[in-house]
Length: 526
Image 1 (tube, rainbow, N blue to C red):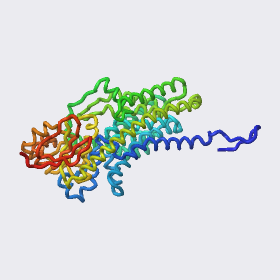
Image 2 (cartoon, one colour):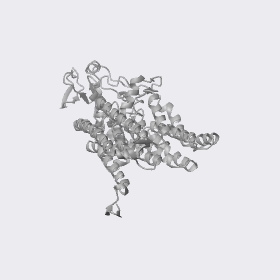
Image 3 (spheres, rainbow, N blue to C red):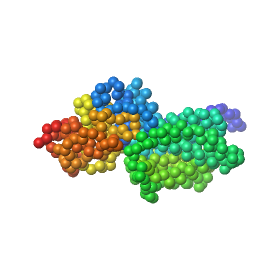
Image 4 (cartoon, rainbow, N blue to C red):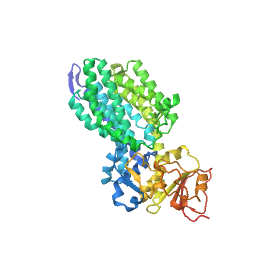
């Protein structure tokens, strides 16, 4: 801040000299506020997350736990879905698994707005204030569903795209990214594919803008030089596809129709609340439309082809492909992120800064009120599960059941996997088909990755059947629960007040609350 003499005496210069520093402080403050619910509620992310957390715990502790060794194995190989395994596991050397997981989750979520900020810097020469709005994109459906490896890789892909744009074309850039791409590939293959797609759109856009020379030289450099960055990841993927993905239903694929496209767009702001995500998306779209139509915002020419390509991606990506589901919801956040990264306030926009800020604060406050409620509920529910399964004996095998897969049961389906952390226990639905963690020969007949809870009818009908003695060749043992009183020591039952509960002399409730009942199982059936 400068003191400037004038004909009216001594005045203080406008805050313009302080504005750049204040802008960065504001961005940091808003990011911290946005991430505060994740810090406050470490187990506020559910879905697949507890399953991934348990896997990393196994990797870190298998060598020192004979109990874990009874049920699990670890065989490292080419698995392009290992962000937690690579970046969270080292944290477990200095902190407990829950804290390490929470730290990783915060980093993964923060990478998206950080990537938007870096893209804004390289595309516009400054970190524009529209970047602040990117914190609204943190709480998306992929995060709510616990796709934490993908969330990490998506944010990392945007950060690397900014670095790609910043560097001049040439062999130094190619060499650096040839080293970085395997990291992105192993974090999550969909993040690697996202980077390649957006990078290609950017380079083609720069060519048509006249910045890449003649077509022959451009396409030669793009494919013969820059294409080398993808050689190692693609070779690894090709080498592993037959072995690692043999169990996937590769004939299963569907586009999903118009409803899936709408779901993809809403997914960018949908943390388990469709109505709120509709309000937030409508509010953001109206605000951005008003700002651009009135000339308050302008879009970077460099990122316009990338924005167009990201919109095409959301409209074109299938809902299911090669047996991999929910592809369509993963990229819905990208067009908004690119739009915010390329947006800059004009002089007319700065004159409307106060109402624009007020509109953002309204949307942010509305979202945060829901996030605190939802993450608080999930954190309490999963901590209750954690405390309950901690009462089981070491090495206990835990079966999971529910009469109806309600939205809450769907979200908490993998919470019982915390028995692995609390009691070195076992659950049948651990993600072993796409990770280094596998199950031992002893446990293989009792294993079905990503299995859904069993109903009371299925439990009753299968209780007196003979337990399976060998696993299916695919590794998916569909009858893993047959004769379950003889093979499982406990049953975790998602309770509903008006639904039937499992019955039998072999079940003894030991923990009961509004969300679940934990039973011990006796093999003596009458």
